[in-house]
Length: 164
Image (cartoon, rainbow, N blue to C red):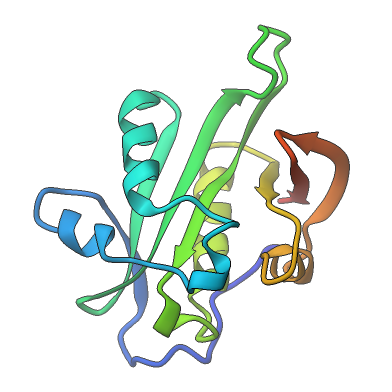
């Protein structure tokens, strides 16, 4: 099951992804989740710093609806999951930040669907994600999209996988 964009999006324009550029950097940095969700996802500024340091594997994108920035995502591509050269190469969603006032409108579902499409185009058949457990965390969202828990733990986070 691959998530598809939700029909409940608030704007008649189609949501889309844009690479982070000098022109939209301010809009990306302005994306903030609800305060009660801050424990579950790093701020965009940290993600962009990590994208700079891990440029060979990071795929950061601004989620736009028309000319409005509504979220940010960062995928990881073809990454040695165990960092030990074992060949456990994985791709998936590293970060997903939907702006506090844009939540519940289908942008998260759109983002997961867009990453699914990108991974399939790259020949990937499994889509990985991790999430911080806890109240107000994203577990129900990911499980609702068809991700299944792998039983693994990655630095205290739950690991999920979706077969593409």
